[in-house]
Image (cartoon, rainbow, N blue to C red; front, side):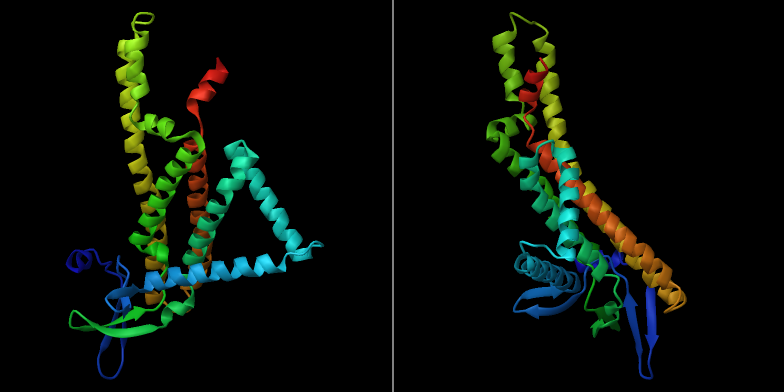
Length: 293
């Protein structure tokens, strides 16, 4: 696995020379191992993800125990932001009750990605360890954005797609969710409606094929969500490393501002798409079709 990844290594390299030997820092496409717990390998991306989860837990506990009946200015500000965001969610779901179920998931995803994105561009990335790698002394930073590791973004995308389908099953039932992908209902109409409407012989196969396309679309969602987030965050890290190699301390500063903005936008896009997928999965298309008629 490592041999394949080494082929994909980005060619951006930073070289630090001391009096005895050269230390190489390669911006690789895979997360670097920085320690072990037994046989379990801890990578810098995994450590950053754990820190992000820890920050979210601490913030959640702090907010929970600081809520007062007579809100402070800060609490009022957060309540206004939450209310505005809920109103935005209502525009997607069309239902406040449904929004209250989906919103916490989308909000948690947003903060997890945002904190990961921002931790990856902090100057703390200068702290790390030196390890022997391929006969060279390689610098391995302790922190690397978890979203710059394709394993993390794939896990998030799978969670979003599988979670939306599970939410659909809980909302409209397993049978209706199953029929979106394998349209047995359309085939059943061939036997019940063929005398009244012979065109069902043409429509039913088309409806079945549409269901198969829906199934392919679910796989495409995973690829789209994961590679978009990974590509943008990883490209940002490569950009900052390249600028630092050209002129350290000065040239990366404006690009750090750009990456802060990109990190925010990518977190917003991923959480909004998660919100949309959950909302679509919980819609009963048969019921909506019946209401129109």
